[in-house]
Image (cartoon, rainbow, N blue to C red; front, side, top):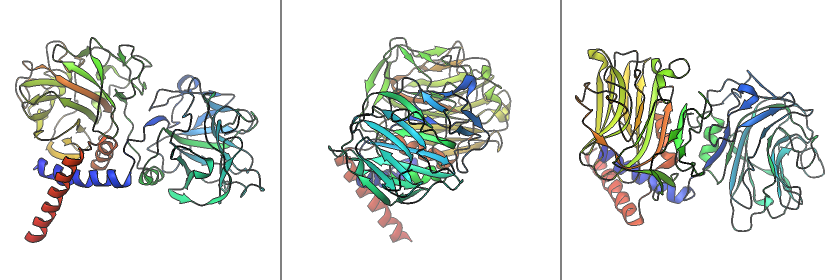
Length: 507
């Protein structure tokens, strides 16, 4: 059943990807939700380029109305404060980019929203509020690059929240007058421009709420929230989703081999909400390899079956507030070397309280144990014929007492779960088991401790401290969906058309 759904769905995904979107994912290189700032540091939950709150900038409990479940926003007094991402140089050169943010101000001055680069012709990148009526409407969105600018045609300075987005598509000679503006989810008309080629310099650090490149007095008076920086274009539907508060869920732990570029034998947790630097995976001989065929994945870690990562620091029972007592979701992107034998993909906890993803031949298994008969459940689905790196998501919903398994964005099954905990004191094993017990051992699938180490590639490992819904899981899949070769694409499209004809014929 999963296979037929995948084939028809994949055809639609592939067609839209080829015809409507860029061929590569718009990588989210920085994302500032501005919900917390421990020690005056506001986390970048996408790229690790945290922002330091300076000169009185603060987080206040007034989030943007459609923020992604956020609890706060960045408050700036318009005098001298900012959030500075020290060491982060933004997107440079003529590289395609997309910037998004929520802004709230009532002052039509030259308020800097975000800025980086160098103050030379074409070499700075400043997003701000327009204060020059000779260039375009006062209070409208403005991007300037020294020597050129583009300005929207509607004032944003009404004391209300507005979602803004700026997108540059590098055509080889990127010019500021080619920028696309979006306000409140829709394409925004242009009220004035002066063309200049864009070649953003590796210069000043990224500033949010100021423009120190041009003039350090260009401070934003008001609130800024949900700042996102992509190093490519995005689908316009993603901008609309961000405006409607339907952006991707935020993980509590996130390991993405595509972003792990420092080659330091450590796979860093990108989020670091629980303890800075304390949740990283130490790599012991695993190599980082290139990935082709998926929209958003460029790299993965290869495991040869001799062993994986086992760690005590990633015992979720020891996280703040013991997250194992709450609903949770687990996302894994992997590519097995084959679909033979029995292997451990990812496990935490043990035989009493524990959860795991394992492979049993061609079947993916998701097991959840909570030390009682009705709390031992499992779900499985065939992976036979599913190409590329595969996304599996396991959901433990303690509010609605269900466990669910998704494969490549599709619900593979659900089962009632009478439990209050999903992991015990045993820690984490990735591509291997930790200690003497695999999470879920002696539960629904019986003995798991005899399973072998995983052989293949793992690209993404994420823990969410919430039960994801079907829409959120699908959105996560589409960020990295597999794109077949053209010949396979034709077969999928034919299969999708044939399926549609059979359905019509049987209607």
